[in-house]
Length: 167
Image (tube, rainbow, N blue to C red; front, side, top):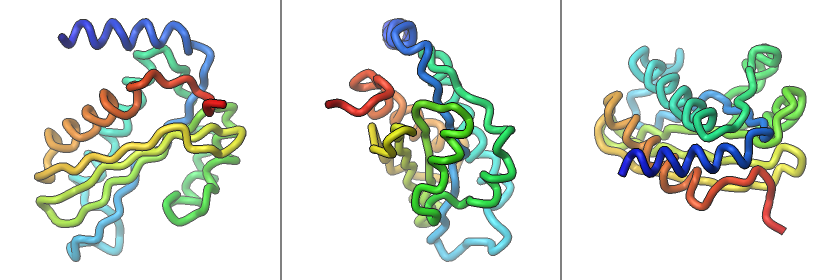
């Protein structure tokens, strides 16, 4: 079954090899009451990086050209968190030459209840192409990876992502 799913991703990737995608780092929105004013705890920073890399890897494996964010690193840092900036990441994605962008957010309700969200937008128009959300239980590497894996399988590539808004 896994081999068949990877085969479908591979076929989908061949059709979209020219689509450039900017995958911004997932952010944490901690509403649990355990939030540290200095930012996410080290283990949560690690998990944010882990699921961001998983999203990038899955898109690259499907044939999308995942752009390097480094040239716009200063603007990214200046404008984050993106959940508060009213689409300020779109000009950054345009400057990077991306066709589509992915932004993600993990909301921590408690140490047991978390929610992983992502949104894909057409960089030219700003129109949302796809969005997804997965509730997870337990604040571990495994649960975060299962949540993002579910989103990739059931929201990102199903139906196949074209990179443009449907007419």
